[in-house]
Length: 388
Image (cartoon, rainbow, N blue to C red; front, side, top):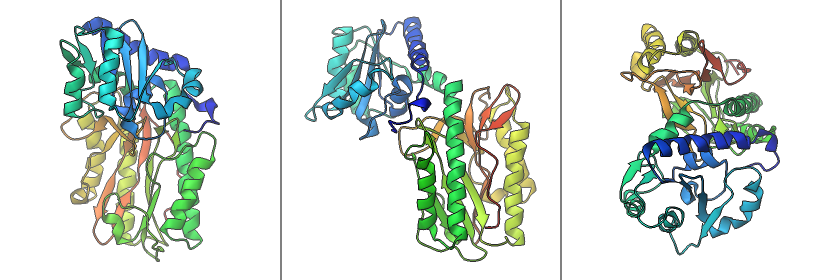
């Protein structure tokens, strides 16, 4: 968290709207208390960002709005800091001799009394183990899954969220630009990664990235999710920039392939195919289409170019809020045989990518939002030429 950038913080009214959405679901489904344990869900509803393990904090919310933010005693001195920045003001602290699940089970009875009718748990999201979920669920007569209610809220981004993501996109572009400059100056992957990191955190609103940055080069880039190394890119090598700016824990990643010097004919064709596939989605995706149809916009371009065998992933995945070491939100995707409807307010990372042994990883990604009429980029136009 960057304590100096309150200008980018989620408005308390926005956080209250999210909480009220869960309370409305609780009223409709006769659920007197819910335990929110997925790290992203806790951050989404409360706005409270702490250090330490992402799964070390949780929210208990009663149907009348009473609440407890449950976390370790070690975090107690953050309570005053967050008091004016969140509707969630009542904390329940526990020592390290007690697990989070044990603390939640005890405090659930404090809010809802012994043996309430039912308790809502995030059964479809990470946060608690099976054993811990059973332990917490045992405090009530019945358990119901609250995951869908929170996912429905998170899937559609508000104007405040989009503002943070656009700023993250600006930081991403600054990081790629700084990394490319380091490569041009003769630096290795570590030098470029360090330059990118400085740019990602140096601008207004910038926070420590949720993942990366990474700058890799050569045929090694064909290995998915390669990390940075100390290799100096040689003439003709692919150079891959993978990073995201982070603002209020919201992301807008860039994954982009350049070439040290001019690309050969085959690599130029692959870069063109990925670029055209991204353009096809950005120009053709509309609200009301399905995930499957959106994926086809990308996939057909790559197939027509003759590179289908090297396109091994879905066309796009959801991005947004991240409390863990990944920028993938996975609340929405563009993938084959998925007939989920695309609606305005969804945000995704479009990843037309080719994994080609001997040539490396070729990608031209785009972070975008779905608008009322189509798609809009969440970052500035690419400022780095293919040949660096």
